[in-house]
Image 1 (cartoon, rainbow, N blue to C red):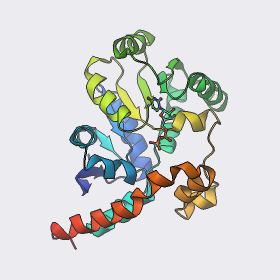
Image 2 (spheres, helix red, strand yellow; image 1 turned 60 degrees about the vertical axis):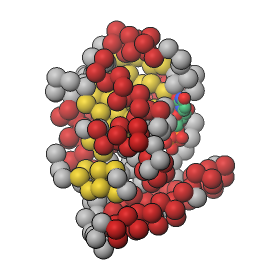
Image 3 (cartoon, rainbow, N blue to C red; image 1 turned 120 degrees about the vertical axis):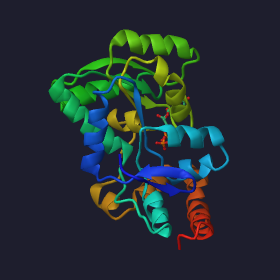
Image 4 (cartoon, rainbow, N blue to C red; image 1 turned 180 degrees about the vertical axis):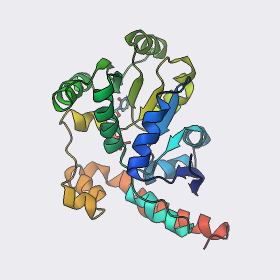
Length: 244
Ligand code: UDP
């Protein structure tokens, strides 16, 4: 695994997208369940005041920067991460590989009906993909979900419960799951289901996906105001550590 680049106390693996997909896939071959987290600036900023979340992020086997804000902030530390790796894209690239190998995936999260719709769309897009099971993310009995996933025989679980719930859930239940890989992928099932749309390619390339999401969902303004605060906090942190 690459040396981690620490941004505001959260260590990021410094990989290209292709390497991240290969690393994720290689984890399926191991004996224990590995975890992958995809924090953006909002999650890293929230982690400053949530030691449980910081711990869950740093204990993950692969941590990628799902946001241009983290990529910019890493530059203050003079060891910038190579690129943004969107969880939604990492998840999809992995599904493509799984569709060729036959290893199955369980989709956990989002509102009732969404995971099933995502499964249908993904199976249409990636013939051969094996969906071991689905369940919405508004459950109360964790034990029954663990049992359901174990009974499904899934090798991989997409845990899409939003932060910090998904990171804490994965850390807590990974030891009890027979799956080999758990990925915390936020709102990805909504996108795979076609309920939420990603920004057009050009906006993503220009690093303006956050702005597109804001225009589409103005209620995100409160969450997004964390970005300038995050960048400032990272700058101060980097200066304190003598990295600038
Ligand atoms: N969610 C869930 N269970 C919960 C809370 C949230 O399944 O108890 C889902 C929610 O329906 C949405 C996702 O988690 O599909 C979070 O999406 P958001 O866009 O907030 O995630 P982000 O990727 O921005 O962290």
